[in-house]
Image 1 (cartoon, one colour):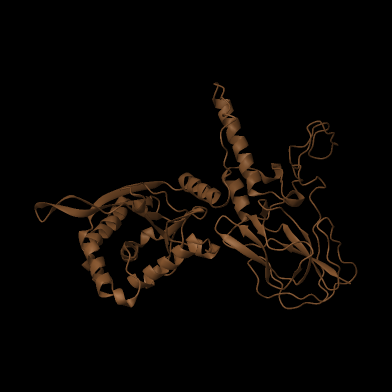
Image 2 (cartoon, helix red, strand yellow):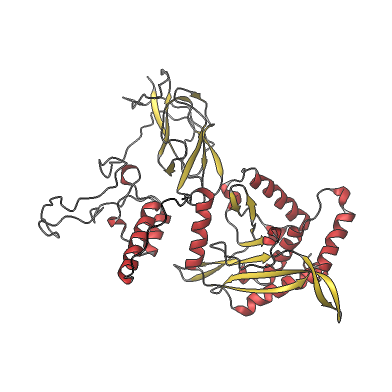
Amino acid sequence: MAQVLEFKLPDLGEGLTEAEIVRWLVEVGDVVAVDQPVVEVETAKAMVEVPCPYGGVVTARFGEEGAELPVGAPLLTVAVGSVEPATEGGTPGEASGGATETESSGNVLVGYGTGAPAARRRRIRPAPVSSTPLSTPLSTPSSAPSSSGPGTEAGKAPALGAVDSQGPVAVVSPLVRKLARQHGLDLRQIAGTGRDGLILRTDVESAIRSVDGERVAGAASVPRSEPDASAERIALRGVRGAVAEKLSRSRREIPDATCWVDADATELMAARAAMNAGGAAAGAKVSVLALLARICTAALARFPELNSTVDADAREIVRLPGVHLGFAAQTERGLVVPVVREAHTRNVESIGAEIARLTEAARDGRLTPAQLTGGTFTLNNYGVFGVDGSTPIINHPEAAMLGVGRIVPKPWVHEGELAVRQVVQLSLTFDHRVCDGGTAGGFLRYVADCVEQPVMLLRTL
């Protein structure tokens, strides 16, 4: 007797709450092995191949390519044991009676586990919040009759999407709860559009937009014109959506300030040329980004205030013990920020090798969520785009970002005489809650001094 097991979209790590199905790797009726990748999904962080922890025959798939699924939603069902392959239109049946032994994997992603092969496993399904079809938001028509009782008025309909104040709220993501709390929303008044009425982040964001729209409508008396129907609409999904959300959150929550300075990078470029000339036979050449990264770790050792984050709920500044240095990288999928772990323990050569490795993985779309999260400070070299300056937006929840413009020949007063030197503009955007301008200016001045006189780094070697 076959046992039909349901494999749900696991937590892919780092607080991700949903993923988009990019490509199915199996069809209904296919036989899959334990830990065989069955679907390729795109999260807000990276492309991930999801392995199935069960071996058997695929009896159903949930979601078409391009659809977004929340964490915990069913991905597919697998018949384990003796079973005839199902057809595409078939509906899998639940196993009846006692469960048989199931082959499973111990190599699991975050949020689910199968452990060792287990016998007589039984799955308990939670009672659904509502029998309303998934395509229809949970709501109560205003004309629906309601019965009177303690705490209610006879003849009045309950609020839209209301849930019994004593019952559970259909929310699994702490990020969704926090977002609702930040905007003063009652989750019991929000209709969930997820499976069994699960409240998704999109539901909360829709409620936020609705509330904001009501405020604007009440304040403005001039009617707004509708957008041109022929205008192109591009969904904020995947990496682009994650970038939009992160930048918006940074602007909402962080009181940032920016300071900048021009620096003479002639000596830095000369030092790099000398390093590459002397070590060309040893391997990869030293990049300007690697030198700047090493300067940043030295500066953060002197000014640890900028290697921190703010716990707004606890009203505390959290000083972080290690430097995990993020660097901005432009790819075909958009802007990503890979992270060099333990950058404060690395020399220029080690940092350069890790930057090169992560950059190649970013361009190939092979970065994992873990490689794109956990940064404590970000270095942004926008000079590669041919621009001199910018006011970077902090990579939330970090406290600062250093921006670097292009290095170009410019007139410069050097040793009392006008000369043509290699000049670069450096800009620092910082969270004004973690420090004042004196600390930020000291950090930026130290970075500029190291750019102008790289020999200063010898003190930290």
